[in-house]
Length: 394
Image 1: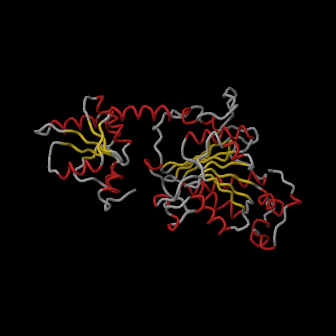
Image 2: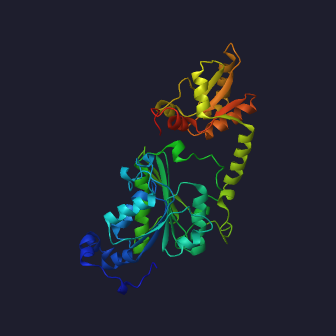
């Protein structure tokens, strides 16, 4: 409904006052504000990108906003997910977002979808909306959102963030490119760390999310030049923007239906391989590790494969830091061998990380080098939750 019947849209006296700075802009005016009120926008995710996006769409006067998310607010979200507050920790993000949106603008209709978007429900959820804004943080969902938008012929306002860098564009708009023109094939699972593993500057999603909101409003108004066909790249450390041209690939596969995106991105296969590795891998709980540490025995070597900055935040007593990248490159394997050989007694190797995933990978690499290791399930996060609450969680 990007071309609504504006005769049916009316503003109240309070709305005239609320949107007065829009109404005096020639590019917006009364007609544009009515377009915003008639618009229906679906936001996938209420995290770092969704937070500023939703705040500004509500403030701008978008009449109907849909939100898809199934997560709850966590303390670690509050550094960047500015739509949520401390009092909402442990509660559904969509409820927190709705509460804040209606505080900003009670004239918004807010639709909530407390579910994970999937191939089974995406088309039904997206169908009532004029455009979709992608605030997700994983490749399977990005491909899913893209393909659903292509099938429904809806614009897809895209953004992504990592550490100090972000990017934004508009897909599937006015015969422009879609996500598969930017990424014809997904990267191998695990190649791109998540924000939980790699970190993100809290301000960065605010910048990229506001760019997404700007593009959304421009599409609704039919004003300006959108980012369709242009990928906007931002580096916060350098405070530099640059652009790359995007063009539709004439030989890209035709999207005819939604598929299994976990399988398409190799996640299903990676999970199966991970489960197989776990079956062949020795593991111990944090309680068992605590007993080992308390026993006073010195027949084991505990190594921590997290990054040095993580090690500074929190550590398990006696753990030796050998980051996973060093193990992957071979130098870390040699360090482990030296530490084991330098002990007068035979030693068993125990490996931990934050949650257990990186340490499992390290154990697998070390096994290929002839070194048997034991993985600590749940990592230092489980240690903090179950053994020593004074160890900070991050």
